[in-house]
Image (cartoon, rainbow over all chains, first blue to last red):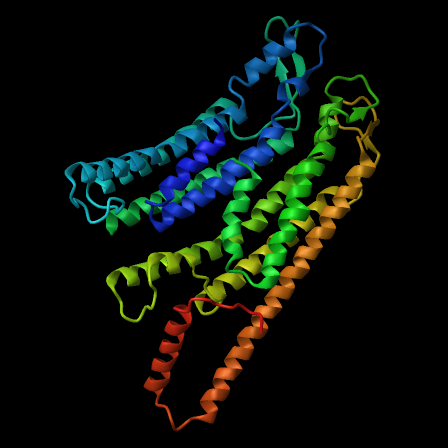
Length: 204
Length: 262
């Protein structure tokens, strides 16, 4: 069980999408999923080991790391990818339901089970709204949790058991910041694609 | 989900590429992606762990590493490969759109289309002409731009393509100027030069493909102009248009299409 599941899910959805929907799938595959797997994961791999505080007090580093990174960037990123891909399942389920109904009644009830009209159009619109909602929620969460998308080189920590205010150094802050900005840019692009697909379907 | 998925996506584009395009794709997968995955990633695997600074000051190593390597070579290459592969998707989308239109025509029962079944449309290979030519040419142009941009970014960020053994760092909180030693500098230099060389080969292949397509375009145009000159009185404007339409339709409905080989 790995990212291959999301890949298969999105490939399945591709069949029932509009043109803009297919561009969205391509953007998610290439610029988000692939970048996450081949590049981003490795940057955050040893983030805890490489997080260093100017102190020998046992436990201080752990406590400070936990204070500054309640949920790691990379985990939030993974959650975002999963939540954003999942609403497409609604469309897949609805098409399967339609096909099932046709089989059950043994007659052609729809022009084509995969055509986006009637109830399927509603489902598709709902999935678009959910996708956009999740994107915005995660962007806001990122912003609130980390005070923006900057990753500082140095953070000052005074949690117990650290004796005083202690300097703690984050590893690879510039690289992490570059990839965070990349994440934000691709999220915004996906939001734009979703909104344009929404308006296209509503005004068609 | 990894580079294999990219291979699946781009493999489909291969059918509709020119011969030079196929060579480019092979070079991309064997000499760039494969080398990145099986070799380069190992070489850069321990880059921060084995980056050693001559100081016990906590935090100095982290800060110096971040100062000298704002973005790791490996990540830059991965991004470069992703961006360079993406324009091929434009071609894939255009082909998919054309196939969709043909399928629609077939389903309507259009008499002009000579396909026997949907399977034929699915297997058909389109010639690179008309609007597909423009899409293909712009995809090559974007590829060139991305390659050039990333090579320049590399050169700019790392002051050339050599990996030095020793770097002198005086970023805070390092007390004074501190010597920092990079792990495996020679091996990294070798791989950097290799990747740059293969990038340059890919740029040359793209330029060659661009010239090839432009030459074909102008030759075809002059042939058409030549034909029109030879028979000016025999065809009216409408007849010419009808002939061109018939040519396009019969071309696109051909079963086996030989690409730019003659």
